[in-house]
Every structure is written in C-alpha cells, then in structure tokens.
Length: 259
Ligand SMILES: C[S@@+](CC[C@H](N)C(=O)[O-])C[C@H]1O[C@@H](n2cnc3c(N)ncnc32)[C@H](O)[C@@H]1O
Image (tube, rainbow, N blue to C red; front, side, top):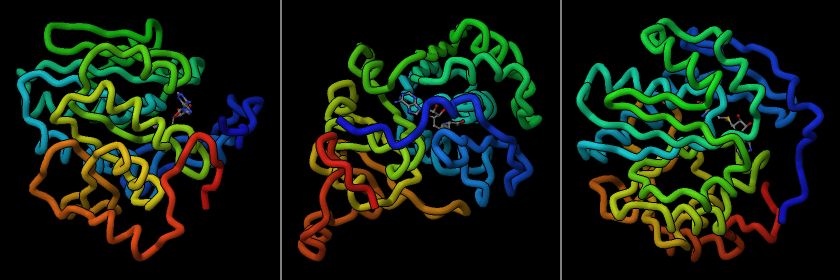
C-alpha cells in the first residue's frame, strides 16, 4: 500500500481561504492543499464541476450519490441547494466518507455561503450526528477511511462526486484498485464527476471499463466525466493516449509514482 505522504499530526491545522466567488474554503496543512479551487470558487466549483453536469446526465427520480469525501460538505449542501430549486421532488440519498471527524463536528460554526442558509438544520444534524433524514433526503457521513467505507456500501451508486485531495497528495483515492471497488457498487448508469484530467487517473478508470469523457464546457476549469454507459459527450480515446505515451500508467495501490 501507499506510504503516507502526509502527516496526520497536522490534521487539525487548517486556515480559512477566501475564494474567487466570495465563498470560503480551508487550507489543510496535513495535505498542503486547499479543499477547493481558489480560482473557480468553492461554491461555483461544486455546482459547475459536479452537481449540475451530474444532474443533467443522470435524471432518475431517486438518486444514490457518493460524495468522496465530505470535507466541508460543499458538494452535499450544493446538491440540496440545486435540487431544491430545480427538482424539489427528487429523492436523494447521499453517502459521504470522511476521515476527519473533528472537521465535520466543527462545521456548525463554518462560514457557509448564504445559499446554504436554508439547510441550517442539515448542517447541525450532520455536524452532531453525521446523519440527516427527512421526507426526500437522507445523508450519511461515514467517518473512516473511504477505501474501507466503500467496501461496506450496499446501495448501487448513481452519481459519484470524485472530489478527494489531488492524486499527488492523496493517491489512494485515485487508483485502479479504488475504481475497481467503485465499479462493484456502481449502478449501470453511474456518472462520475471529477476535477482531475490526469492521464494516470483516467487510465485507472478506463482499465476498469469506465468510458472517459471531457465535461461539457463551463466557466470552471475542466476535468473528467466517466460512466459505464455511452454519453453524449466528447469521449477521450484512451487507446490513442496509451499509443502516444507508452509510459503512461494507471495509478495503482502498489506503485507510488504521482508526478
Ligand atoms: C478536497 S477535500 C473534499 C472537499 C469536499 N468535497 C467539499 O466539497 O467540501 C478532501 C477530503 O478528503 C478527506 N480524506 C482524505 N483521505 C481520506 C480517506 N482516505 N478517507 C476518507 N476521507 C479522506 C480529507 O479529510 C478532506 O476532508
């Protein structure tokens, strides 16, 4: 397995960072990275990279969403915000692993954007009990290592927000073995959204049978959309990528080469 690239003793060291859209994220000293793109903005990144493309590509009446990982909860809260405005009757079941229990417990005091004000009860419940449920929404934050949590999920996942720290800083959540475990819990229509467009990550998906696409054009930086099914998006020819770059390899649990 991976040697730890980060120092867990730094887990509590975080500082607030104001992002381009006026919303606040944190910088993690443990991973030496911000929780969101400061250029795209925390809320805009969440909506435009994950929530909106996934909602267009997966329009079932009820959705099981895997949010990797909970962090500050932007993806989960932006999902509630977006679906409440656009698809208020949709049933949402969000499962989100998170290693950092004290971070989740601290979120009741986090400076969230005004868009999340209607979800104060959700924030309080998740922060205290790691759980929220009402008529249409169920949220389960599972404290622990996402790799372990995923192996215990019995629900078939329709949407995966793949939003871990970067492959360089947190490779264990981007390998072909990780995506093999994702495939085991994926519905046949799964939509994966991510900000990463790195070839070793795309190969890790592709080698598990996922088709890899360029996301629809938007104002935020590009990334990748992946699915087991054909999508009406520009598909990336991974065989051609491998021919052109014979040294390109999928990220793997056994090999720690992330450049
Ligand atoms: C980039 S942040 C996620 C941001 C989040 N999606 C949001 O919208 O606020 C990455 C998160 O992954 C968590 N994490 C890192 N490694 C993990 C692991 N192996 N299992 C579970 N959580 C992990 C970190 O504690 C951090 O909160």
